[in-house]
Image (cartoon, rainbow, N blue to C red; front, side, top):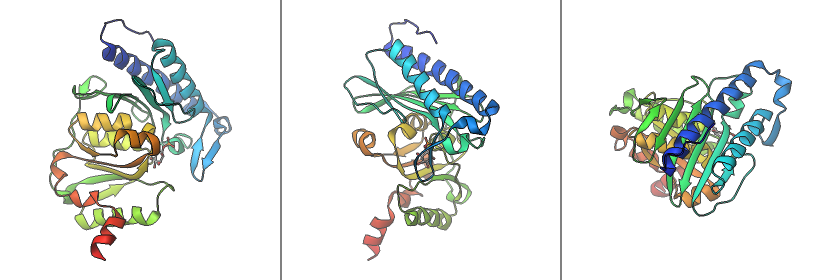
Length: 275
Ligand code: LIP
């Protein structure tokens, strides 16, 4: 990866992040195809929460490349951590959808976001299934490689598709509650196990909704910006809180925001209203 010197700090960072995501994603993809399953050398961070050698290798590659090109920028990564600092900070999930990746299932990707104070400035995601790199710069639209993408214009919940996510960080009853709401509204649903990619599917109009009750910043910051720039409505906690403790994420195609507004309520809030 070579850093361009255009004098536009954001354009330089975007070009670099796109090349870096593409390079890291291609390397991970090759590793996934060629490695014996034993080479994944899996560690557990918790129940059903995996780290493979490829996650570590990908994060090392991204961290080192960014530190060399932009030494003044901060870095927070899923595997190696980091701290918030004033100015630009990169927030990286080297492989989102690790559980799929290590089983050679198609839904995984490399997610690189750049934040500044309270704003997400850049989002770049390598989609492991297609090898495409999706990107967005705040205020400048969303793209799959060089092609502009738009969220779905559907307005009828009974033909809409939702992608949902769940981890053991939140009660299973909350997940079931959300599925029941979707079912009652006539929305069909899938669970693919990679939040960054779920947000991309809302951004490119393949699905109308993504919801997960708890996600960490590295899973979603790039996907949130890409979905928003593609026209989707995204509900998220304030950025400082998301960075500190994670939180719920709901992305909806714009014409379904009103018909699906009830999904913004949590199970506990709904119990309080009906009690
Ligand atoms: C995972 C996600 C998955 C979600 C989990 C987890 P990882 O990220 O994207 O969809 O349900 O909460 O965070 O661990 O594969 O990078």
